[in-house]
Length: 262
Image 1 (spheres, rainbow, N blue to C red):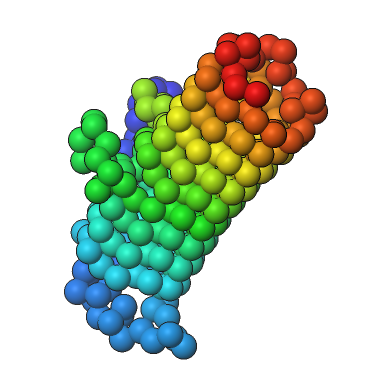
Image 2: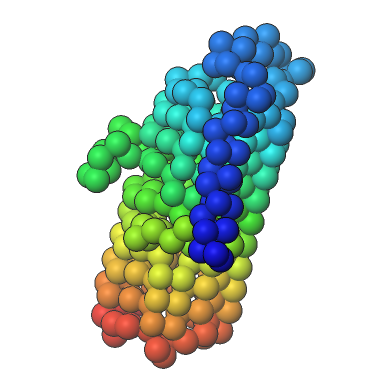
């Protein structure tokens, strides 16, 4: 009986997502018209709008207000959301191939199982951009290989699963990302793939890097004070002029630390 009740709850939640878009009555054309009529002084206001499952690819959302918007399952491929306000927005299961989020505010947003690439092989032309974006406090579960995150704020980033979300074999992958100058203080990056990532001058103070893959990552002049490196893989990692390494936790338990470049 308990199993049946759980199934009904999950089904009701799924139907709620589907019905929400219809209930809102917004079509792609209406959204496009709202954006077309927007001005610098009065950006389009789509705050708390239910846009779930719409095809919003190639649409210009620059500086739009999408605070608390429901973008569940939306196709945002090639859309321009630079400077948009997506605080508390739900982007779970959205498609963000070649989407521009540069300087957007995604603080406390949900990005669970988002699709950045159309194939298993990440293509540079399909990489979304989060350069300078604010992702502080956001929840992330995604493969964002080779994505531009330089200067982004990922402080207090939450990695993985939360209550009510089904578990998937997907693992957070930030390998090859440009995180130069990024704020990652107090971010949860446990077991995240960061191989070959550019982390020069990154703020990793208090970050959880336990079990993270940092092979060949460049952490030149990064700040690791208070970061947890327990069981992290430092094979080939560049640790030149790193700050706060003597204050990092679990450094003596990191794997291949003798193979790091100091």
